[in-house]
Length: 259
Length: 342
Image (cartoon, rainbow over all chains, first blue to last red):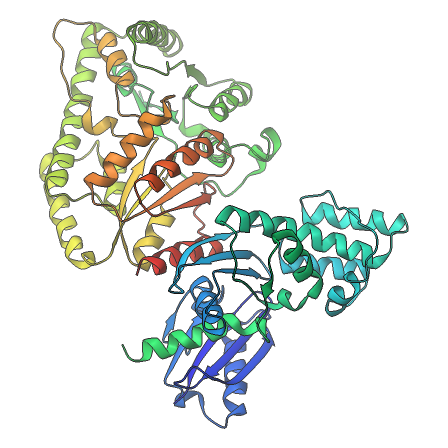
């Protein structure tokens, strides 16, 4: 029997199908675009095709993410905060804090010893400290976003961005380019700028061992390095951090199917 | 002659004096969708309620003959100055409200209100007699009594007014009689049956009038108790009567002795009152709505959360704008909080 979780984020729509043992049997990541209903159906169908089943064969479907209310097939929708907590805790039961840098917001979630959400913080409507900030900078620097992590690890000079606002930071980055600063140093400065926000949130909620980072930005090794240095602890990154929310939704689907 | 309508922004403006002068007060709570005027005159980081009020007044200026402010917060003082400039043909007035209840504050407020009466008489060319004031006082007092009765019924039942009903009472209280209140009470009990297993939530803050958040909370699955610091409980509790005392003196005493609200500078007392109400209504979860850029509320919320934590009451601070919109991010936070409670 199969169960699905669909996570519609502002950037990507992720689908995970699990069996009753909570093992991932299929996963799909698609660009979200403007039509939530259509993309959730397309992604779900692709995930089903991977294991030769039909959408109707799925026992239970849970939707999550900011587009969760627009999923036609979902039997239930649950917030991404609860889903990321479930997903991260099932992947690493030592998890106590989750950092999720999403496309339009960042979240820091604190778990109790049983894996339940104990507290959480979300940044307010603001691009600084989100994946969108990195996207904008990627365009300004004309560097592929996937190369940001690798490049920043070669940085030798500390370039500081003083602007708290993503819009002003963009013009500040342009000034740094004009000053002749190296791209890798500017990228490292951008990472530091984002991490300032995240570190403040982690410290506010209470930093402790057992940090897991989820979401697509967790693939950026430069960000992980900065966060580990600043928080003075190692950060666990699942092998595919982008699907953790959808995996948590799929776990919820298994739990809810019996109710 | 048509009745003159006066825009007010705070419950510290005495309805009795306006009524005695033949004026009708209206608390500005409606939403404006056009922000051209406030963007022109006010800083972007000024309280969104004040900005909305300015836009709403500009769009509906022909409906009001005057605007009465109180100096209870910085944003109101700014709004008063701007309105004085752009509504030159209207009665624009600010009342200096003392921040405590000491005798000398009552005496000072008495003088402030006496000047206020004179200003109204001069501008609207009316004479407010002792008799007019007493009639107005008794009428407002009668309405307060009805509100108190309603509140007592609900308190005795350890129940409370849910958002949709509270909104109706706030909007219609002047037109309702005790029979209508009792019918409303029956409706509330019916609704209670429907929601009896839901999480009991207190939604508190200042200027909660756009109750979209409350509606969303009820939709998600919560019973709501509203606690609006600006609405306060003045209309519920101020029913005491005095004999052989000057009516303006009674008003001065009553208005300074209403339950602790936004004008109370002793924030600890305000916080303690919130905690008392949380216990009274068996609240399980508190959502504290803080209007963006309202420095008073930001400061108070920091203190209140300490008290909530000390009393092991789960809470979530919602930074909101004075708008009908309920953003996706806000809803996610609210839903996630409810999920942690389940």
